[in-house]
Amino acid sequence: MVNTKLITLLKTLSKSETVKFKDFVSSPFFNKNQSVIKLYEEVIKFYPLFDPEQCKEEIIFKKLFEKEKYNYFKLKNIISDLYQLSLTFLKLTANEKKGIENDINLLNELHERKLENQYIQKEKQINKHLEGIKVRDEFYYRSLYEMARVNTSHYKFIKSGYTFNLIQNEFDIYLQYTLIVLLRNYSKMLTHKNHGNIEFNMEMFENILEYIKDKEFENNPSSRIYKQIIAVELFKEEKDYRHLLELKERYIENLSMEDLYYILLVANSFAVYRIKLGDEAFCRDRFGILKEMIDRNIQKPGYILFVNFINTYTSACLVGEYAWAEDFLKNFQSGISPAEEFNNTIYFCKGYQAFRKKEYEKALEYFSKTNFKLFLIKVMVKSYSVRIYYEMSLYEQAYSAIDAFRHYLKSEKLIAEEQKNAHYEFLRNVNELTKLKEEDIKNKNDVRLVMLKKQIKEMQSNLLGVKNWLIEKYEDFFK
Image (tube, rainbow, N blue to C red; front, side, top):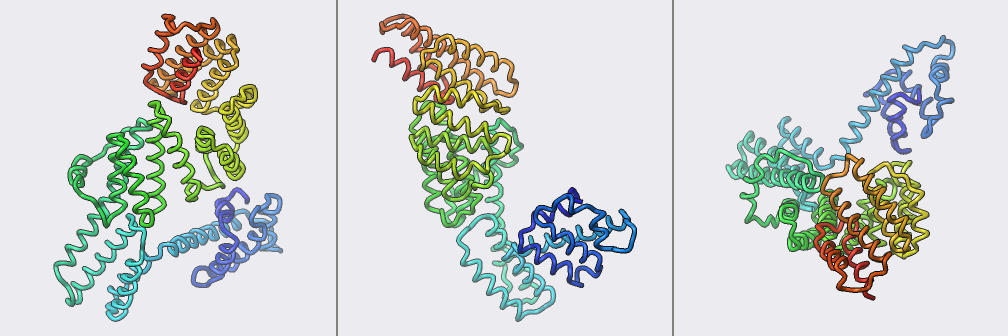
């Protein structure tokens, strides 16, 4: 019985919800079958673990029908009835969370029943509530629209207080609501297109851009934010990125958690983009963005994808925030998902910190213990390992690691060609750098050094910080 849909659902209930559900099942308005009530009373005794040995169907049946012989189909029907009740309970629970939507639905019901006095009283209450809402997102404008729609119908029906302005007002609010939805989806499409190479059918995009180009949306902060996100994604200009962060601070009290999350997501992507170009001044920006996700509880300790855990931890180490990184590790490591990547993630983070602190032997030891399935992290381990061997003047190991990295890139089909080329470029230059270091070249005018300097400066990508690292190692020749 443990694997039934009923038990799976009951496991998700909070302690207080199990009590509410008991009252719900016992209510004759929803259920008159005493066997269903008794089934719930017996099953919920095993909450929250629902031990398989204790929840066997034969045992439960015996509790319900002491003198009867076990009948699978009879029990199955009762389980099915209780499961259907649990779904109805969830519907009501979800409905309770809607808040203002329920009040507007009630207002519409009062209109349909021609209860004019009650309608006016409820309308005043709803308007007062709407005026007090600070977060002016799409759900706020949807509530305004639903309210305007009910009012247009109501005042037209009673022929009192009806003007054509009601129609205009309904349209204006709906337009604001629609713009938020469109701009939010366009911005998401652009983000996935730019960073995930995903293609979308962005119907009417150019028309909407033309319509909004001169609009400031002072009373519609969500549209203003998504308009700016679109600018960041389209033009990749620092001024647009900085303005997006300014808007975040200006409208912080009027933004939903989703709006705020998307601002930080796009800001992080822009910072990564600039870092890849070699502008490591954005490393501090990126750490601040990821830290804000933690501080605002957007990223919660109970669940964090291992890739996001690594990105957050390493961004802190990159700017010397080692104490913060260790505190983050302590508080968030239990939520690393999937669980099978826990050890890999911890070993990688420890290895990266050791690498940044120039504790190279320790870094190699940690990296050697990782065995990631995801190619994105595999290439990181290989890239840092090559650099460590160089730093330790372990030339043969460096050449071997370079060769192994090349073969891996050729065999891995999931890596985009642009990224492969960036890694190949790094390997070609670090291979030449290793040869020159092994030969202990000191002459600035050595043709190979001159050529290497030119090749490094012409690199198109600073993926994983390799270009800046190569420049630093090249300059070490003359210290």
